[in-house]
Image 1 (cartoon, one colour):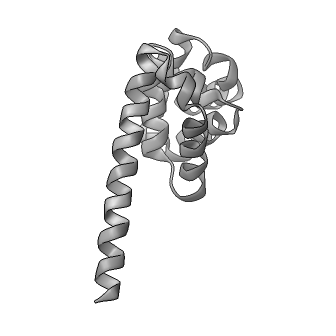
Image 2 (tube, one colour):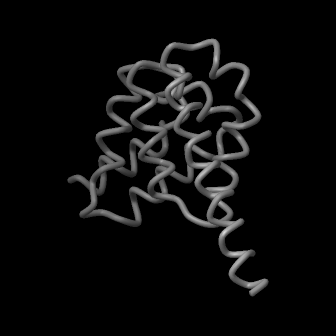
Image 3 (spheres, one colour):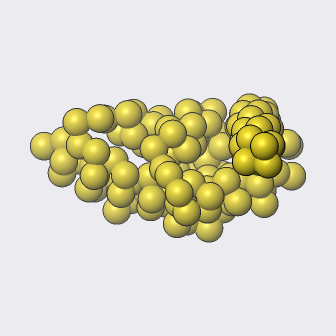
Length: 125
């Protein structure tokens, strides 16, 4: 039953992501660790939608769903999500909830840059 529900949420993800209550449902679904593949498919679907993460981030319950997406994805998919959010930074900063996502994204980026600097310094030695 949960697998079927996750599959249906994935199909309707783009519409749900544009509504605060829909984002609440998506956020709850994204923390379902029992169905890893279905949850990853849902996260991927949300990243595929043009500017969808930015719009979600600006909604009350959307910021939680965006946080879950960023925690689930790796590699190129995570990079794609970060690029989408970075491209929408102007929109994020005009939204009460978007500001939270933008701030968290900036913190992660600074940590990543710090880690890259440390690793380069270690390789140089």
